[in-house]
Amino acid sequence: MSKRTRAAQVGLALLSMISVTVHAGSPGTWTKISNGAGSSTYDSALLRTPDGKVHAVWPTVINKKQAYGHTAVTANGTVGRPTTVLSGWGGVHSGPLLLPDGSGLRMIFSGLKSTSTSDPYSTGAMFTATSKTGNSWALGTGALSQSGYAYASVGTGATLDLTGTPIVSWSFGIGSTMYWHAGIDSSIPAASADHTFTLPGCCNQQSALATDAVTGTVWLAWYSSASGSPNGYFARALLPSLGPRKKAPKSSASGSSIDPWQSVALSARKGADGAYLAYSNPGSTRLYLWKLGTTKVLTVPDSAGARYVVLTPGADGRLWMLWYADGTFHSVLTDEDVTTFGAAQTFPAPPNAVAVYHVAAEGSTGNLDVVVNIVTSDADYGFWHTQAVAE
Image 1 (cartoon, helix red, strand yellow):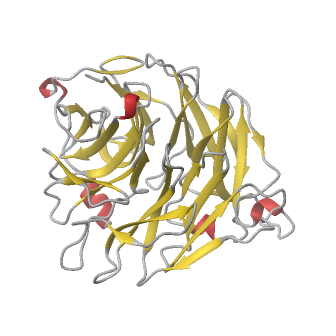
Image 2 (cartoon, rainbow, N blue to C red):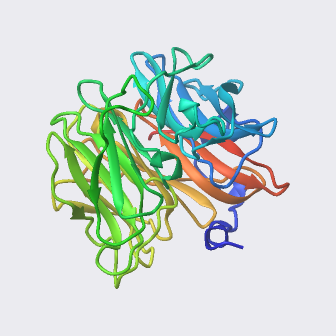
């Protein structure tokens, strides 16, 4: 049994012990949103469109071929039927990404469509697919990377700058080089070169991107499991100019840190300034929330043992934080200035869950939509949705 599996398999709290109401499909329940065969490595991406729906995309296996699926959830938590984004690929990256495309959706991903060397979609570059509603998707004819390393990346990131240009990030496996690319080239692979920078030590991974809604600064954050001082969580500004690499305060101790197990919890605020990074500290006694570009760090109360940390914009400049600990999900909402935290809410994992692997959330209009990759007691891997209420 792997270290990750041992750490993820924790006892689940009894539903009768939970006092907060959650909603998914019908109040107080989780709803499975995925189809096909799943895996513990699969992650999901969420995006809310102007009609209030939250759209989720996720990897799956259908007819022994890899694919991406899509499910839409209405503002009141009603879950739609799964649809297919693309299917029949030889391999797809475990972490798809979603960005707005006008009022529609743009999925960004990497994969190997076939084994043919003449197939441009088998280069391992960053590709795109778009949809107006999520019901049907068009595979893009361009690429967002020149290298083919994105397919092997442990964690990828995506954001839009203030002009609407997509920016993506990835690493070469868990190596010492970080890559990023701005814009979609018409060719596959991209004709324009990727931006790169070399990092000390190995094991730089789980990158994420966010754009400050006021200043336009594009931030990159990542995790390093290297030994010594390179160990921990890091961030730097990419645009409008490359800034210095900064280590997140208290993100490591004695050369050790807490692996995020998914892309790091990085988020800008909706309609307000600032980008923030959330992370556990060694010993897992608490969570920290760091405002990038400053020395401002908040300690999140009652956050011992936090894993699978998610940070996402709330309404009115607030930020939602979500994490998993001791068989229970915990969510908390900041105030409008991100100076204090409201009361934490808790809710149990999906029914019959024996392990939690990846967590995603979206709360930009108020309530928090949560999607979790779990394996149940009958060895079924899949994605489940619920909704926590803003109070």
